[in-house]
Length: 152
Image (cartoon, rainbow, N blue to C red; front, side, top):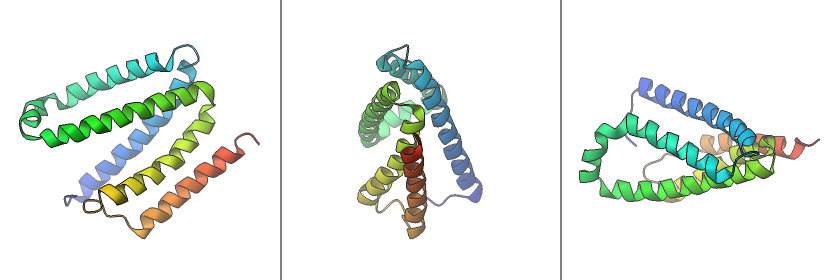
């Protein structure tokens, strides 16, 4: 990972928090939607909107990327495939289970898999500290607490 300024770091944290809020809102809206529409239709709508938004934001870089960064496209294709599988599974879960059960499972599961895969695949690029593991343990513990006591 490159050295970044404090402003860039804070902007990244703000973007991550915005993404978390957006994912949370999207799960609630999706939960209401999958009762009347197929998860596949909901996913298609979401992915079409994502494609248009991303094209608008990043289209000026496409030509250079296609020419110079073929390895990045291969990795992106794999990441996009995995992400699509994740959305299909989330939308299917929201069709069958309450959002207050699904969201904490995601909140606890994502850090586990992210830390594990980062440790295995990005060892040289990502710095994983003891504090990272402690923070993840708190997130996972909170998610387990919410999930296991949701029906109580």
